[in-house]
Amino acid sequence: MSQPLIPPRGQHVDLRGYDPAFTGNLAKEQARQLLPALCERLNELQDTLYADRRFAVLVVLQGIDTAGKDGTIKNVFRDVGPLGCSVANFGVPTEEELAHDFLWRYHRETPARGKFVVFNRSHYEAVLVERVKSLVPEATWQARYDQINAFERLLVDEGVVVMKFFLHISREEQRERLQERIDNPKKHWKFRQGDLEERRNWDRYQQAFAEMLSRCNPAHAPWHIVPADHKWYRDLVVARALVDRIEALGLRYPGPFEHLAGIRVV
Amino acid sequence: MSQPLIPPRGQHVDLRGYDPAFTGNLAKEQARQLLPALCERLNELQDTLYADRRFAVLVVLQGIDTAGKDGTIKNVFRDVGPLGCSVANFGVPTEEELAHDFLWRYHRETPARGKFVVFNRSHYEAVLVERVKSLVPEATWQARYDQINAFERLLVDEGVVVMKFFLHISREEQRERLQERIDNPKKHWKFRQGDLEERRNWDRYQQAFAEMLSRCNPAHAPWHIVPADHKWYRDLVVARALVDRIEALGLRYPGPFEHLAGIRVV
Image (cartoon, rainbow over all chains, first blue to last red):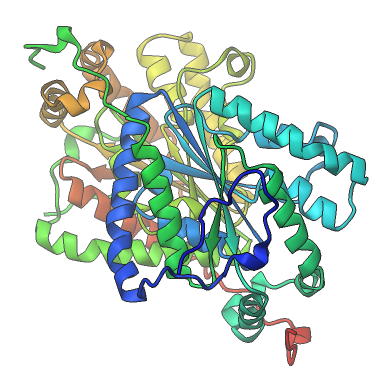
């Protein structure tokens, strides 16, 4: 049993072909043992990325409400910590943001060389919520796929590693997670009546996700479709993909400066 | 054997009275056992702070080169993570920043309600490096103590908890840490020739620190003088002070909304 993590290029993604509960025959206990070493490795890689100063890493997290974006950040970046990584959250656009092109507010938050930034929701909202709720005309959101591709091309050309993760959960899993927010008093504050309304748009969101995954999946900035019904598998997949990709950069500590030899601090 | 964490108000701080190697008779092994629970508690408190939305927390870290600002962030905010906390670093001011009042770039980075922000160096640089290196006239930096007090008063009045930590190390401890950067190839990139030049200003920095600690120490935003020669003690002191202060806020999860009762998600 297997399913691709990165959807094949040049064909339309059908999300029904991706099982949100997929775990690759891995047991939860095994995953729990594997994750800590990956988190530690990611932290080491972040240190080297900072010293090396040639590359930056932008992690894009998308997924429907309750898909587990916050939890993924908590668990995968546990060792990297706030010193090595910052998180950009994007809410309802402000008046000033609306007065600019749709990529403006996202561009400001992209990582400087040496840094990790996680987009907790991202520029893809412009072809997700804005499309599903008809906030802009179809001609506008249709043009955005190419605009997004050009934007990510620029980032990659300039040394930003763009890692995109779509957290894929089932309709039933979302039902359980929303119900938990209603039933658990400590989670009441996370719940909005609007969440139930959004859930009624489930099919339209799945369609918008599929189109985003199909049209914005170049080799230099591919999507990863992460089976996310099981949180432990989701975290492992994201951590491993990041470690593999960043290790492949061949990062290094800048070499010794000759003039340091023999210096004694007094 | 004891020494105050918060210097007494209304008298001039003499840093020679504060032992940088102080550990309050605590053993390293004990501290190692105490820290994890404090880090976890800090994470819980951050969650509640976010749900509660009445307060924000601004952590200010100051200290001479190698005092351990980065290490403190790594260790104390380990469980809070990048989702719950962001770090603002302030380097050499840009042209745009210099074209504004000196507090402008710091004000932009203060935390929104519900958030933790750590200032890794802060607005106090304006009465430290700028004073020591005579980057501005004396009349300018002399006026800044009151300007800083007024700025922090505003923040506190508006719900920001301002927690200021001065990481206090000895001259000998700095010597060892700088030497390590020269001797360990993995740390070469952290070393600048300018670091040795700055070290020659040691006494002038101690004097500037003492004045900052004396003149900007109101009850609503006190300084903590953290003995920082021992990293394990430093981390414990900072973590405990944060937990104690934030617990005293009486944070709470917003109460249950009546209209949630009985809702079944379908």
